[in-house]
Image 1 (tube, rainbow, N blue to C red):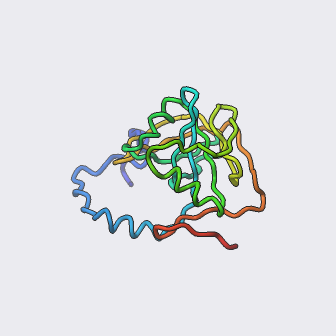
Image 2 (image 1 turned 60 degrees about the vertical axis):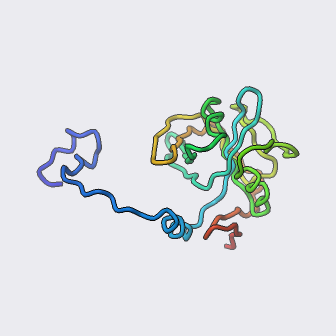
Image 3 (image 1 turned 45 degrees about the vertical axis):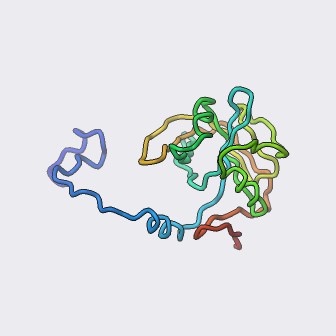
Length: 182
């Protein structure tokens, strides 16, 4: 951007173009199909709100920063669980292992007591750490950003741990679950 003083703009990339063309229309099914070719790990995001545990499955988890330690996940605006996590102000990211597909399916649906018969303990914030997950990160909500039909949730990590050093992750790819072989 020659000739533009970047310090005058809040966005380090500079001003938005004045005559921006409208975004192309992308068919939702095609968008999902193409993005399905990008493998992701699978997590269950949990919180304790009003003394009750809540959780949702998420493959939209990523690390953001080492200093300070920040992570993020996305929750759909239609989620019935997200309002409870937001109200709690904290969450735990539970990284699922290759043998936890059924657990993921349980937390991927709306309704029911998702924690019935599931072993868990409280992290420092009170959020549930699910028994036998590969790893976990206990976080407080740092920020929320509206993004289309989802909210991007940024969390500050306060505590974390590994449950299984030798375990392999559950992977989501092309609309199905799979295993990782190194």
